Figure 1: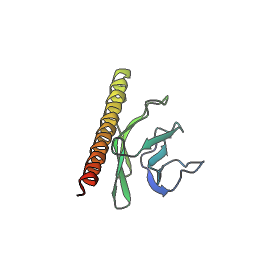
Figure 2 (figure 1 turned 90 degrees about the vertical axis):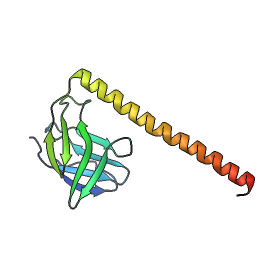
Figure 3 (figure 1 turned 45 degrees about the horizontal axis):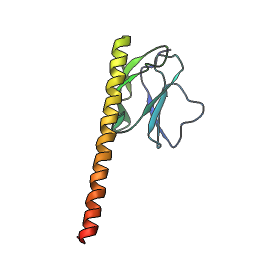
Figure 4 (figure 1 turned 30 degrees about the horizontal axis):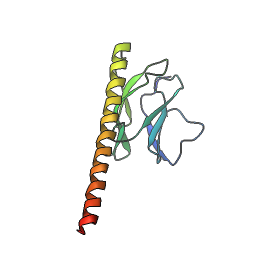
Length: 133
């Protein structure tokens, strides 16, 4: 049975048995729920700067970008906005491949930039120590 809304539940770790209609938001940096199409599969959305993010508005949450269950047989595609499910068109195989390439490129760009900043910070700190400033 299709789910039209998810209730956020903040947990340290996701329980071994998950309930339908619950968006488990783990303190370990992920949001997990049973697919809203009703297929029963678990959907894991890692939270982070180059992945999904959650915006809280009172008792509701919005998860972005969209949830695309490309690796599941159902291949459901939806937004979670203020706890409500907004169904989106399914992607073609070409759209899925392009989306996955784009996601991978964004992750690599984010972590490459972070690594470069870390290197410059280390160099600057080394120079400051060397110069006594």
